[in-house]
Image (cartoon, rainbow, N blue to C red; front, side):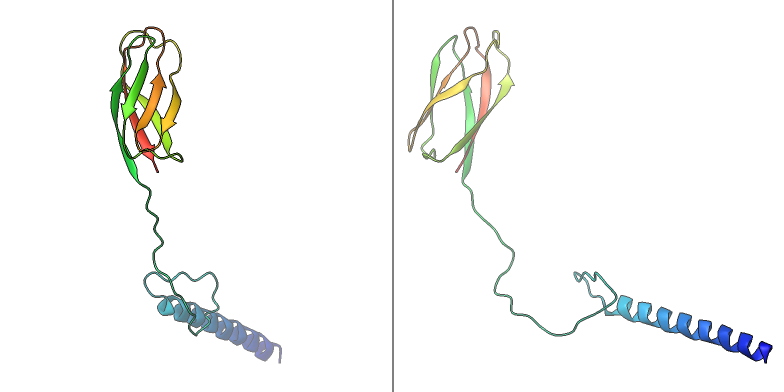
Length: 130
């Protein structure tokens, strides 16, 4: 009797293991390219989806300008709006870059003005978003 119980216990373990492996294989085979399964439970059916890849268009333009010592530089760019974001980066050092330059005015449809440092004659890149 003891041996029969041991045999039945071993058989039960083998059956559970085989069923588990079969379920894992079933889930692995059910997965298609682009499908992500987060659990071994697969729920069939459909759902309504009225979209696609989302996109948004943000106008981006840019260019370069050169500072003159302690000067106010007018940068012409007709794509500038009242809500534009303007980013400026140093391209080529010229003179002494002593203080941070800044935008003093933005005029929609025309451009913007930049105030340069006392002896800054550097070339800067700018990017206008929006």
